[in-house]
Length: 285
Length: 154
Image 1 (cartoon, each protein chain N blue to C red):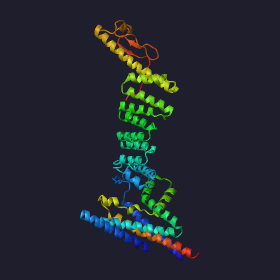
Image 2: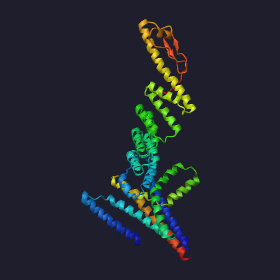
Image 3: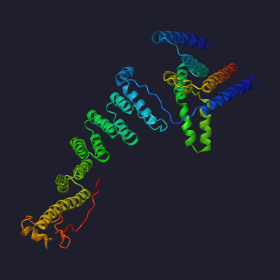
Image 4: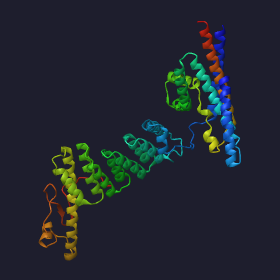
């Protein structure tokens, strides 16, 4: 009987505390837009405080960071993002995931590409045998910033990492050739694609891609030269040449160029326009 | 009772020293600090009650581990609110609600940010937190008595 009374009393008290919890919850909107305050010590202090368990502390802060940066209702959540990820990577410099996920949050969520690249390059310094950091940083420089020379340099650094898997090496070589194309350095891009095309290491599908790129880039280079010669002919004789041979005969071209597949370019004497027999579209930024 | 008075004395001494130090360096005293300490004491009372409760049926080491675990769980219990909006299954939702109301919500006693950054502290939150703390402690104590009571008949 006494037990029953005590159980009832316990349940009654627990129920009352639950009701008060409900009152509290109704008066506090946990997920409305708000600002919050972060107090994180420096890595140096945390290293001392962790008593040798700095990787464990880095783990905890990393897990917290993933959860924290997924809280979209916190308006100022990105205020100290660089400090947070620098802190984790200072505590545990060989923790690859942190650089990867941190750079994704910085670039995709915060939209700060330079910050993401900084974190990735820190990863490259701390883990020199990982090609991925340079590759990812190069990708950001290429697609997000449109800084082609910087992207090419980063891709080339990725290629210098000895432990890079062969398939990935081929892919990054493609990226270098692409980057040169985007930078409008057609001749250099042609040379890179030619190396890929002629290399015994390239996979069949890569050779196929390289072939179409080589065709397109060569056509663009040749047609540019032919158009220039046509313009000079037009300026001197005030009419379009009857054929491309006339350009060679009059000394405007040293020879009639042929496309990468060995075909002649198609010339229309009525309009004075020249084009390749096949058209491969390369995506241009 | 003895434990709660001991904690009160220790906390009181710390509050006094900290307040004197604060007064000496800034020349003023923030009364909001008292609200913070009051709620902190409430949180400590809950932890004392829980450690007593666990001691009634577990070994001292297990009891300490359980209490420390509850301390951590209590400070992230608010995140259960996230599930309320995401979980569709009514049975799972009921279980979640049950866990949410049975475990102590200790984060509500944490007013550090509000005090340090001079943010408003709504009275309704303070009073509901205090009331919650008192009723929760009483319920845990009654549960502990119940366990001791059962033990006496063995």
